[in-house]
Amino acid sequence: MRVTRSSSVSKAAMAVGLVVLLVLVAAPWWASRADLRLMGEIYLYVSLATLWNLLAGYAGLVSVGQQAYVGFGGYGFFALAMLAGVPVLVALPLAAVAGALVAVPVAMLIFRLRGAYFAIGTWVVAEVFRLVAAQTPALGGGSGASLPASIVKSLADSRDLREAMAYWLALGVMVLTVGTVFLILRSRRGLALTAIRDNELAARSLGIDIWRTKFFVYVVTAGLTALVGGLIFLQKLRISPDAAFSANDWTAFVIFIVVIGGIGTLEGPIIGTLLFFALRETMAEMGTIYLIALGVVAIAVMLKAPTGLWGVIRARTGAELFPLSRRVQGIGRPEG
Image (cartoon, rainbow, N blue to C red; front, side, top):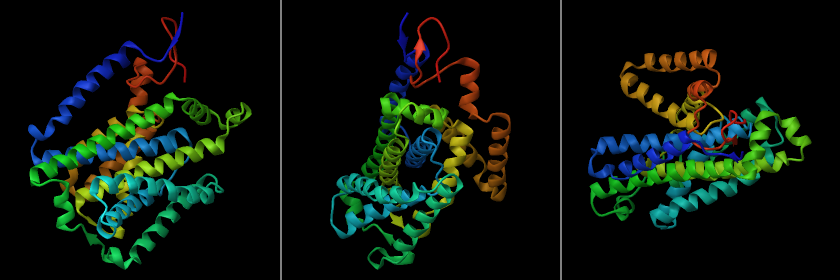
């Protein structure tokens, strides 16, 4: 008898996932430009949803202001590339580092808030970031700025190669994000997060430093969210305060994705993103009916499957694609 994390399902999922990843890496040779852009957008939303899920689903930090770091990353990337002349592939990680650094004083401030006040505080921070961006003339002020053609062409010589590069960057960021969150959850800090998620009072009584654990998660999430933001606006080639700090695009849709997929799981954001884009691509032309449909789906899932779609699947089958739970081999069901 021994305790293990892996199972036959997770091993098969990892093998299939590797094959799928190789196929996706080769997408520039078999997919159209429109398909590459759509898949790149899907990857970026998977990244944002995975990060928000780590923040809210494990650390219990329900933020409605993560657009602050999407916008900060976008503006940070534009400032580094346009004003400082930093190469594109260097500006992106530097924007992520800047996002993590600015999250330190922000966390010191908003961690004084609890519950709904914390959520409101994160939104206020995002609004402050938006107002600062709107008052920055060097980056276009309220009207925003476009990325110069010289910077875009520095990424690659031909348009096809630039499209491929943008696609590979989005895929790489998704792999980096999901992989980072997976490793965090597999570590001792991940065990602490699981304990905090299940019962914060009990976790504190066991000696877990809750503030430090949540602070670590917040800073890491901010940095990676800023990286995603920089890449989003590299693909869009233009940035403005309203677009960069859009609560609807970068927080509301992300929360929808996590809720319907399954909060507190790694698989949930992936499933939720695929369902979200399936609904968007089939119903986007229906205008307000599309938004109503999203609301109906969200309410139905919250009422009928509070743990999300993956939560229902896991409860019925015990399947786990990412091996996080500890199992007594050959005896029982996985522990929390």
